[in-house]
Length: 492
Image (cartoon, rainbow, N blue to C red):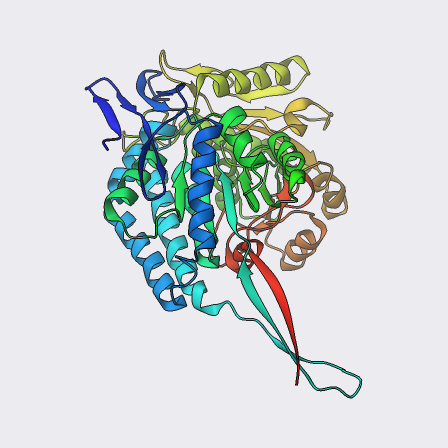
């Protein structure tokens, strides 16, 4: 059945979800309006699934899991199919990148990088399938001979709820380890950016590469479809990327059947620039730590601590980088920073700018909307000379807004870095190896970048301390939450 029912030059309407291996008409009758962030124009409408759509998707995932249609394939066959999935998505890389730009507003270069990353993720976890081993153990059996071993088994049906800041990349980052572990999965993409997930569902229905029910995709609103997925008694695990506030609600929802939960949540990440740092590298790196993807990054370096002697020089340098950045449509190859994702997000970020000014921070650059259409805001730099407890220095903004504050040296770093409820990312710029590694030891965060910022690789676990989340993604740590360990004892 065709998913697009209205394909005019102005907009499209999608009326189906991907359930049980095919496109299924939505039971929910509400629609999601999809806007181009660069213009503010309506570009499409997507069916918003409801609890019944989620029921159908979970039933398909449960049937796939319980009948072992995926698990009974050999590890080598499953690995090959996951690898092939990555290859097929790769053949549509340009198409998916264009969809991400239109949906999210990100620059094309950023979108293409995300597509390459998710393909690498599928390849990485395809290789992991054949490396999930248990152990044997010698037991003290009081004179009895006992053979014992452990096995790793999939947790079951997974519910994945994903964010809008890197829509397809994060969706695949959930799917890849889940199916590599042997689970089936139901995905609820973000309502702000549903188009790449819709297209993925269309291609999966066309390819018929994977067993029916292994992957299911239901678009919908968080309060309806997302809540139904989190509450569902036949979902064994929820994996979520998004805000800390929603993450806490998901923990409550998981209590019904004690779902396993993995949470990748918010951050207010500090970046420290010492006076012995190579400023030609540190300044642009610190600027891009907050301005990349318009600051819509969970580990964005939004708290910038500059050693006092170089404070003015560095903050002016960061402001100069922001001032020089070209704002515009992600389709323009000259664009370095795109719009925020929505009018709601623009209003939120602007409210923080107004708060910073009213609470006494010095606005060094930016703080204004850009252009007469779309959801653009200038890269924005504040100075908080007295390190006052103000909102822009403490709360996650999720926009291109950085608060710079002076510090006096390594003795202050631990208290400043950890004076937050978050612990996701952090950066340290120094030419002193001892200072770098001491700082890394003192910072309570899941990621510490030294003389760089934001480098990610599928071989390295990613996640946060404190209220930045539970568990890790990527690396072996990224597949472990989708597995249960079984101990087996045999009397010989």
